[in-house]
Image 1 (cartoon, rainbow, N blue to C red):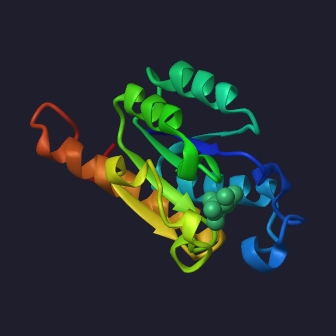
Image 2 (cartoon, rainbow, N blue to C red):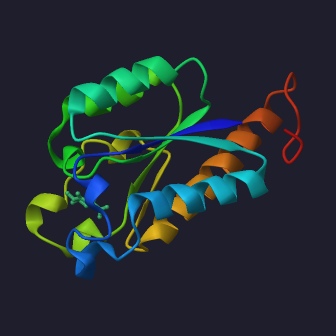
Image 3 (tube, protein in one colour):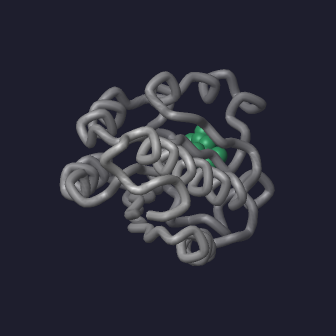
Length: 158
Ligand code: DQA
């Protein structure tokens, strides 16, 4: 099972960017932890970060045929971008929205996300663990979906 992981703008600066809010783990640390968990779960992650929305949309269009789901930290784009929502919907794959911080407990403008209504779920406020929980939950979700389809491998076997 292949899962795309999208990190939005400024997440390349994890570890040095507002560490009191986002923690001290770097983007490499996050991707490394995700790869380790994916391995344990029998999945593979394909991480991608860009500060450019266009590059993220191109990545989503490119991977749509080879991934079963998407874990996405939209960063600031979640609060502003219909285009990112449309790019995720165009993959026709389930996605989980992730935030390191808990945007609902911060400034008012962070309380709205264009992605949330279309996400399978949202994990926020747990730092790197938000990503790990999101990956775990998405894999379980996809396995349950497969199990519900009689033509597919039952949960835990694929
Ligand atoms: C963030 C929260 C967003 O509000 C912010 O713009 C980010 C990071 C998070 O992971 O907590 O860049 O998505």
